[in-house]
Image (tube, rainbow, N blue to C red; front, side, top):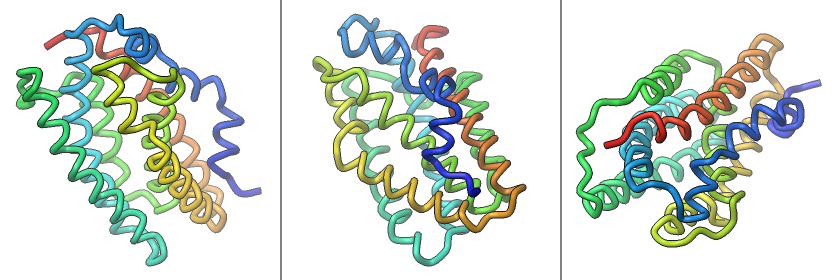
Length: 208
């Protein structure tokens, strides 16, 4: 039986919950997160997204023709997202020319390591990364200002629909993938889950 995104979520429910339910997100929803902690996350997330954009570009290069439109739409959205991050950082007087923290660096290196991976592995990782953002910001429920703007960006229905389409593309790739590729995709999913958990936690480890 071929590996599927839904199957990964079911098999590794505990790991996925740890990736998408975290005190950082709960405290954003409660309005109790410290500004320095949130700012730490914001700067590091911008640095992550710059590398994520490159990852999506590499995934695009490996994709079948039928998947190009969806991936191109994601790249266009990332251009807007990077500009939005710059505006948010300016509003908070944050320096985006900040070194990556250790956790962010590891995550970026992981994405880079997938450059030669089969498309099914890349597509699974892409879906998992986007779905972690989608669920992470959506599950706590409505958030107060200024965090509601962040929750709306990744938790809105349009982004949810986009993530579902990414899952469909990953499932289609995995349906024809040999066993070794499916095993690599499974490992990539688990790596994303662990890195997402660590990324939320990073906000508590240092502050800008």
